Image (cartoon, rainbow, N blue to C red; front, top):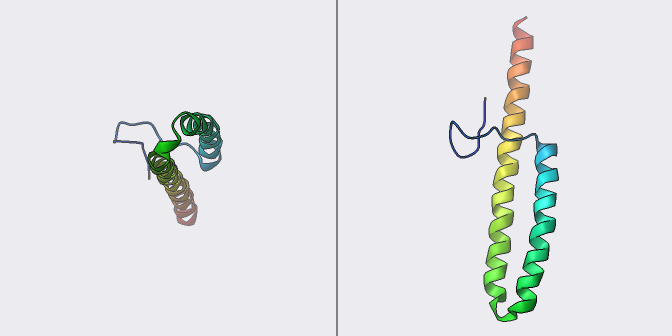
Length: 84
């Protein structure tokens, strides 16, 4: 099964290992921004907490899609091998 981001014409999801590298880079960048926001506007902590949770939820969804894509590719390969 082919798994794509956003729609049937979207880009294919990356391999889990590639995705984890990208997510780590994104988190490193986001962490700096979140710290800056919290330092400048400590009263908006609740908003920042929501944003952090949303970011991790989106990352989790991306990882699940990547794992699904990888699992279905492996299953298709196993099925094809069984037919030989």
